[in-house]
Length: 220
Image (tube, rainbow, N blue to C red; front, side):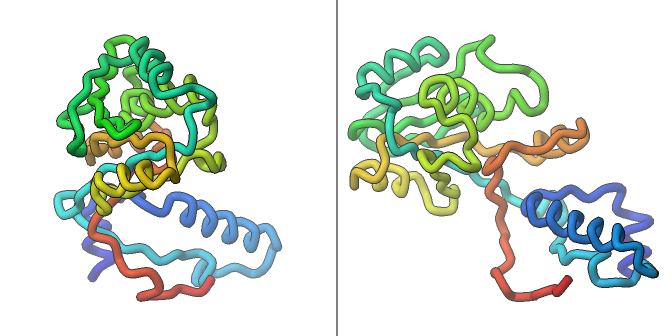
């Protein structure tokens, strides 16, 4: 019954979370097949466990960034450098949540700022237009020399479920030098990236609901 429903009523499914786990499972399956064993298609390595939700029952929350240093700059110099790519305005002590795409919050030296990406500072393709890409290209890479967010230990990621105060707390405790709040990626943007044959940038989406880790285990 479930197979029939998917065959007839579900035109496509998208991996919204767990891209790396899915890729690892596919690689394991490929390695088994290359052993030239007698394969029927029913072997456990031909499958991996998933949890599927209708798109209208998913919520994408912001996925924010905190950085450990300003690449040798003080906060005044850093703000000045930002003004080349962003309109920068101070907004006070309260956490600032971006209200629209291409808008960011910055917490630095006890103050929150609103950053608005200037027209022409980002690409219009499905990946380049994402706010996480704008932040990565124009700030983390260009100003802070954080080129690979997957491996660079100078950047950490904070899911929106933890709230914006969690960002400020890390800076206030001296663990981090600055924090950035992002506007959430939309379901439509995620579909556009997948449909274009590209892959979402790392740590770009925080999905809810999430299943509890270890609730169900599938052995390959």
